[in-house]
Image (cartoon, rainbow, N blue to C red; front, top):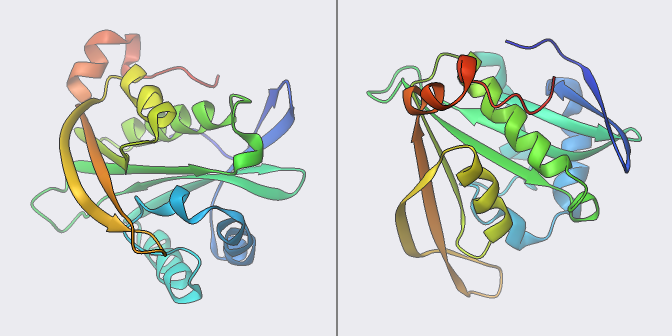
Length: 192
């Protein structure tokens, strides 16, 4: 596993990648409240709800979730999470969830966060990874396809936004062994 915090330089300035913990709850809530609802539709729960954030922190402490924050100028601008259920039949599978502030999109930070979350998931010894997003999030889909993920399912009308409009969710997946054949050491090498 990589060591955190890590500073990374982009054209738009420096950011810090760090593991999320209990002290970050208020900053993550502020981050979530600044996101467009559409950007969160692929998440199973509304992270704007304080109860959801508290449960998230408990899962981090329990070890079933690892969350990586991107902090720029002391403000959370992104979050990458690896979710796994060590007590299930799918303990070998992890789900990657990434979300990034709209004002840093197009700077490379979102791609770097996705790559970093992917590398973190690989370091956890997971054998299979999945990711979900709304079908219109084409840039995010392209980022994960570049990491070796392939579309596996389309869940029609799976989520509803606040206006009651339904949206499709696309599920992408990858077997880690396939990625390790493609990349020396099995790592995307996104941030070194």
